[in-house]
Image 1 (cartoon, rainbow, N blue to C red):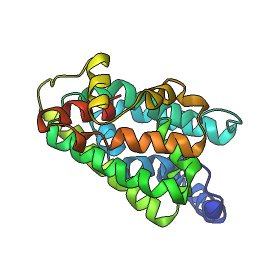
Image 2: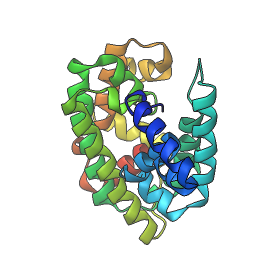
Image 3: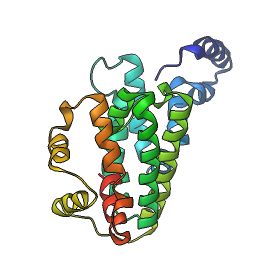
Amino acid sequence: MKRSTLVTVFVVVLAAAAAAGGYVLYERLSPTEHALSDLRSMPLVGAALADHPEIEDRLRQAIREEEANPTTSGPARPLLVVGELRRDIIAPVLRNADDASVVAAMATRVALVHYLQKADPPACREFSMGGISRPDKLDEEAQRLFREVLVAMEVAYRSGRAGKPQPMPTAQQVGEMMREAGFTKADFDRLSDFASLSNDVSCEMELKVDSVPPHLPAEKRGLFSRFVVAR
C-alpha cells in the first residue's frame, strides 16, 4: 500500500499544508486516500463501494493499520476487507445477474488464465485460488486482461443489482455439467485436492473450469457461469 516514490512529495505538501492549517489537503493527498482512490477507480470494486460507502471507513482504517504495521504473513488487512466486500455484497448481487453477462465474464477469465498460463504461472495459481492480490505486479498485457475481467464482472454486477433472483445450480448439477463438458475422474480428483496442485496444474484446471460454458447447451451456460463468478 505504501508509495515510496511519493514520499518526498508528501513531505513537501504536508509542510506547506501544516503552515496553512491545511489538514483537509493532507487527507486528500495522503497515501491512505490515494489507496482508497485506487480502489474506487477499480471496476467492480468501485461500483460496490459506491453502493455501500460505509465500507470505505473500514477500508481506510485497514489501510492505515497496514501502513503502520505491515502484515508479514497471510492477506494484508485491506485485502481482507475487500474479500468481505466480495463475499457479503458483490457475490449475492452476482447471483441475480443475467445469463449473457456472466457468460461474457467467463470468457474474460479464459483469456486472462490462458495468458498467465505461460507468462506468469504463480499469478495464474493465485487467480485460481480466489484472486490476484497485487495486479500492479503483473506485466502490461496481464494487467489489461485482468482489468477486462473486472469490467465484465462489473457489467454482471450491475445486471444483478437491477435484476431479479436467478437460479443457482446445486453441487450435483455442477458436477453433471462438468462431466457433460468433458471432465474425467482424474479432473475431479485434481479439483478435490486443489490446494496441493502445482502452479502449472492448478492453472490448467482453472482454464478447464472457465472453459466449460461453450461446451454446454445454451440453456445451461448461464447457470454454470453464475456458479463460478458468484462463488
